[in-house]
Length: 250
Length: 250
DNA sequence: CGTACTTAGAGTCACGGTGACACGAAGGGG
DNA sequence: CCCCTTCGTGTCACCGTGACTCTAAGTACG
Image (cartoon, rainbow over all chains, first blue to last red; front, top):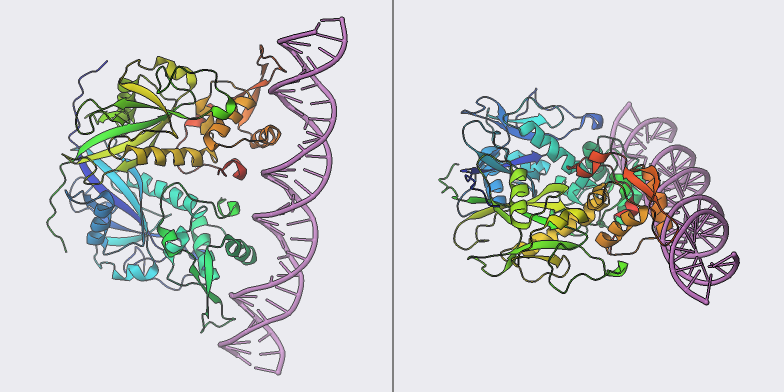
């Protein structure tokens, strides 16, 4: 039954798809003007490849796995080195290892995906070879990276419905309108503010801080905090869905 | 910003967690007597390690990645070589790569999970070093394989609720009682037959074959077939949940 | 040969979560 | 000071689900 198999001399790479609500310092078009809620979309930092294969193309930030580091550690290190971003949420996505996905040598890529808060993108590296793109409007990327981003987007949209990862896009405290805006951006459809409030309050995932946000031109909204601060970072399959209707997106 | 990193000299392994409704030829206790519905559980084939590290311990079937094969191909090949099973459903689960998970050298394992139909386990290898275990009653396995199985079980239970993977446990045609039994086994709780029928029929995932199963001591049940035969094998995150109440399990 | 027994399958009802919508509350800007 | 906006509460109808009842259609057994 046992045949002789020539073992693969594969190199192990780690890449990361990083999602943010706002682009970092540089993105494709002119500087960011005030974004209308309808314009909102997800932003992804990409790095330009400086050597073959795929020279000149945009690619996911990544690098080679170090001898003493974990896979997740390598993901955090390489995306910090290339983009200057430290994510609040980091989870393994999928491992891509088709024999022909890189021309010269066999490369197996363990891909992670990350969520960052707006303030965290401010530490982003300013470099013509790092640019932020609209996640739904990407150019043709190097290797199979377009498919990887599409897969990561699907995972993000699915996971939003049965976890608290939306908190990872926001600061320590936030208003319900800000949380709803995260859902609307990711799900790409408007949500009824009243129904959204009712559902989220019933889920018990948030607690009121007792404070309100002042300085708004309207009625000051209450500020909330995640009930379990560690919740946003919990991975794995053992999660309780918060509300079925937050899982449906067109 | 760039430090010098010693690259990992890691070997790439592929392992698979195989789930079946019935044990194959050999399992831990005495031969399988007639199982009562309440006794039903999921079965997993494991192989005994014949060398260090972990010699004597039971472990997931697997092997090294071949030079010319895909990751999924390597999973299919190695589990066929070690257990003689060809799965109907095969999907990547997670990649484990902690630096210390194998004592001597660095091993990164891409783990898959599989579902097989009862008839497919009949080709299983008869070997004292291959044994079928109750998925919820495993001994202490080699390496981190206990955690891997637990993770796979969680994924199976979750995915049952928003996909048609239950079909992968069954033959081409089946009765609603058989399909319900799959759900009851995986979810570990009884389901009301009438409500289950209503929900599944409304989902449109099944079509009647027009035939019935004869030879039963009772009223002959209708036979059904998956509406989309390829559906059972569809992976990825882009699935529509069939019914929220089939996602809840204690 | 008919009655009992078992499972298949259809039907009914009440509860609760959700979508759609109305309305009062609370602030700033003209 | 009125009007605009958003915040936040409340109401109602619909529908999926859980619990349950009832009929259909076979076999087993006396």
